[in-house]
Length: 157
Image (cartoon, rainbow, N blue to C red; front, side, top):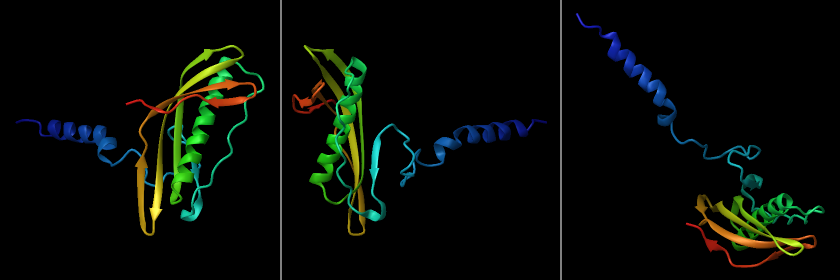
């Protein structure tokens, strides 16, 4: 007589292993605004009110390759957030993320190239939508006095 428990045990084990994949999306449709799950900076305005611009960061006092890169990322994330909020008054949530591509030492400053992406959630009456922006790279010159935007955003897809 064959053992009927073996196929059943394999089926149960397979379902247990796949349960994370079959349970639905890996993210919630309304993530907790206080939890940063993907490294993106997210500005949340409660009750569906429009998002507000955020202040641009100030240049670091001690300019090094590392601090110039960190500042370039923070600056571009805030700049993109503000650009989206200004262009789309119906935005209720914005997420931006940039990573350093390169930092090159110049005479007294640094050329910082960052790669970025963004998304935003908007609301028209009862309709809520989500839009993703195309990934891009941009270079800024970071000095002790601040930052200079040196070029247009270049698509990076």
